[in-house]
Image (tube, rainbow, N blue to C red):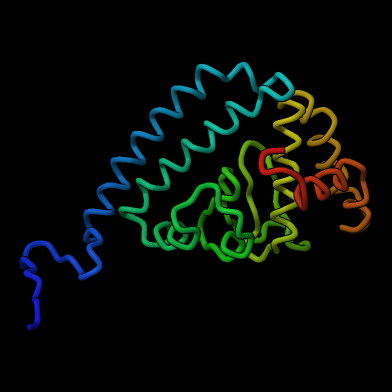
Length: 203
């Protein structure tokens, strides 16, 4: 005897039992709103920790989770963001670099927001890291890992020390070096590459 399943004309449900897409969208919007507001409160309270080596991890993490909540909300109305978020299975702790660099608008890598942008300077594909990560759209997984290494430096050093001994020298080096190889051979760039390629999840 064949068993059929009743499906109302109002709300479609497939045989796997998953919720309809519109209901998932609303769930992400509501959940994203809660996450964004909660993490905003944490970020405001812990903001002074940004200057303290090691402790900067807390506001940096909550700051990025504000954007995760916002991305969940935005996916309701922006098809490109929804596609990119689906590409990482809605997981902010995604560690698949290929899923990130193939994104069109934004993505998340190990708890950090990654924004994709066009080529601004005509040089080799690059990016930057300051609180979040930003990559040129043709950047490779290597560039992503390198910029994540810079993000780890921010967690360890705190924003003040990071700007002084890494960020400022890095910007100067990038625009004054004869080529990208010369720039990448600087000790703070090699450190970022090493930390981005290996190490524990957080550090």
